[in-house]
Amino acid sequence: MLAIRSANKTFESHGRVTKAIDNVSFDINAGESVALIGASGSGKSTLMRAICGLEILDKTSGELLLDQQLIQSKGELSPRIRRIRQEMGVIFQQFNLVGQLDVLTNVLIGLTPQKNAFQIMTRRFTLEEKARGLDSLEKVGLVDLAYQKSSTLSGGQQQRVAIARALIKGAKIVLADEPVASLDPESSRKVMDTLLGLAKTLNLTLITSLHQIPIAQKYCERTIALSQGSLVFDGPTPHLDEAKLTDLYGFSGND
Ligand SMILES: Nc1ncnc2c1ncn2[C@@H]1O[C@H](COP(=O)(O)OP(=O)(O)O)[C@@H](O)[C@H]1O
Ligand SMILES: [Mg+2]
Image (spheres, helix red, strand yellow):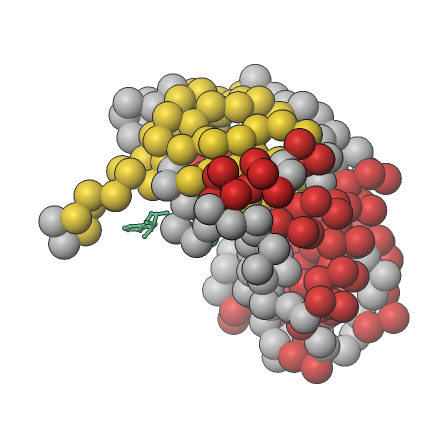
């Protein structure tokens, strides 16, 4: 489903060179739910952005492929990236909803390539599109709030709206970058239950970066761990026991 071959990314700013991704390779099969863990600055976001084609890797990198379609290779983005991105749903730590707009319109934004708020507000959606939006909201359990202003929702509800927005186009793979980092434990649980429940029922492939290791342990069958840009663990999550975590991070990861 997803193939990462020798990903490398170097940043240079103010004369300081950071190797954000250091020769990372892995494959993810269709339907897998994978947690991407690692301390802050370990390269999780850079890797996720590279997979969506938002970050161009170094020339020394190999290929990134989604279903055998090229995302990028050797520092060049595929000319078909826009087409490939249609198959990806992306969720961020900040829910990025337009607070002034109702919930349904925020979900429908997932259908539109234009980003300008004015264009969105003046865009007329067809009945068929609205039905798709409501269907997507139904999946995250928020159809009753469709016509409520987004800013009135709780953080957890807003993130579930963001999930509905990410799924409205029928994405096959979902990339979630720290989706629960801004949420309290109860909201986090609801968001993760929603995300993983949908991944199962819709047979989605899911990659989610997580700051909290216990959440990875509860929800994801497989974990990939990064440390300073390098892949330091890739395997069944239960194999990440206290000894392994201490080995990787110098602590058990539960603090
Ligand atoms: N645009 C950028 N310019 C310079 N350095 C960057 C940039 N983006 C990320 N980095 C650096 O790359 C490393 C990995 O960052 P990031 O992928 O955001 O890690 P994580 O998501 O795991 O916290 C960090 O050292 C970060 O400072
Ligand atoms: Mg990050």
